[in-house]
Amino acid sequence: MEILLIDDGSKDSTPQMIDQFAKQYPDLIIPIHQKNAGHGGALNTGFDHASGDYIKVVDSDDWVDLTAYHKIVDFLKGLKAKKQTVDLLISNYVYDKVGAKHKKVIHFPHLPKKKFFGWDDVKLYLGQYLMMHSLIYRREVITQRAHLRLPEHVSYDDNLYVFEPLQFVRKMYYLDVDFYHYFIGREDQSVNESVMLKKIDQQLLINKRMIKFYSEHIDSETSLGKYMKFYLEIITAISSIILIRGEQAEYLDKKDELWNYLKIKSPKVYKSLRKRPLGLCMHLPGKVGRKAASGLYGIARLIYGFN
Image 1: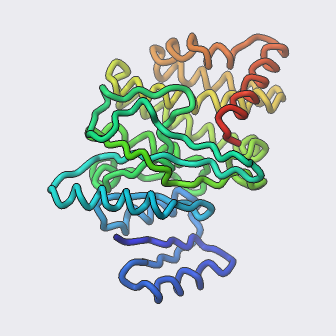
Image 2: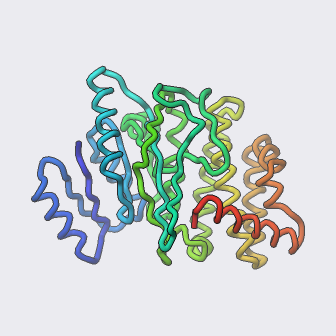
Image 3: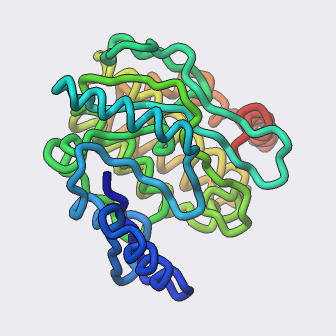
């Protein structure tokens, strides 16, 4: 076990805290100090320095449940003792939303339990996406197969962390424990809707990279391709609804440009997504249609607990 604590050019007491932790736990904690390179730059540094068999990313706002942590570590130790590996370990995550009495737990009841499985066995439904919070990748998948490098100083790069390595995942396991607690609700958080609108060009950059990657590397007819299209659909829908709720003509033009980009890069995927419920909702005509789409998004926020 190793914990990489990455100080990404912090101006507060973070550097001193990290160094103090490293002194207290020299066999466990590796302190790393670097110039600010954004979330993606910090993850790239982590990939470069990690030496363990598996990688779990924990953002500084978030935390993990200790009981679930021990179950996950015991499971991975058990695999190693049997000389077995898994490409992707999936666990539940919790939306720790500011002011919310009920903490929404995202679990995956339709995934196989207590056995290894592949993409042909994966069945997920609306609201059940393999987010960064739920994933533990085998390090080899990230660094030696996908050779993943994330853009620096660009928000929403976590979607690339989830998306691009999936093509190299063959063997999965779902551990039904509430491991990751995702803090949500801070006003300046990147997933706050008003912040997303200000950073919409970064969201679109990530969205388009995903479209390009899918069109160049993924067979949409395979089980893996169908899941990745499912994930691409929700990211494109989020980009679209943020632009719709921005209301201004320039935002609506960007929404149309995004869908045109998808149409050019992958006509088959465009046709598929365009006729599905989310695609239809994003293209309801006129001001009334946009208000309806915006209202449906508000309902989804209440149901699924996201920001």
